[in-house]
Image (cartoon, rainbow, N blue to C red; front, top):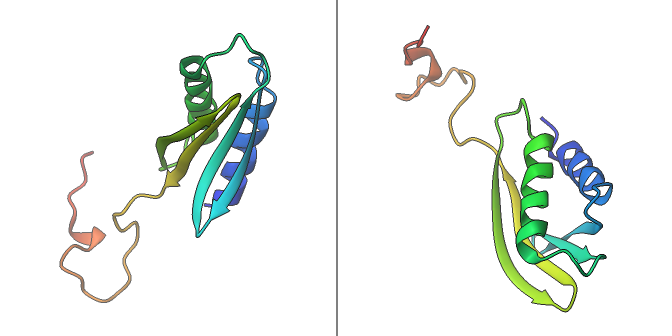
Amino acid sequence: MELDLVWERFLEQLNHSETGLSAYKKEVTGIPFLYVSLLASTIGREQAEHTIKVCAAQSIKGKRLSLLMEYVREDSHLLVYRFRFLVPQEKMFCCGNLCPDCIRFKHSRY
């Protein structure tokens, strides 16, 4: 799973949304931040956050990713969020090291 492709698809959808948002990603000390410019003055923070979450959900559809979005600050028409797509913490394959939490020992639900 390539996170760069997910980010690219997400930013493309967000920048082409009908709400008039312009967004870009910037990493500071390895932490990704999402900068969102409100181009239309009629859009509020709540509507912008809803649009961001909808575009993120469309970008990760069919993948085992989740979203972490934390509001950082607002400066006139610029919103800043700490924004990460999270990969699951559980193992998805057997590494052959006989781990006690090996995926081979999990019971199938089907």
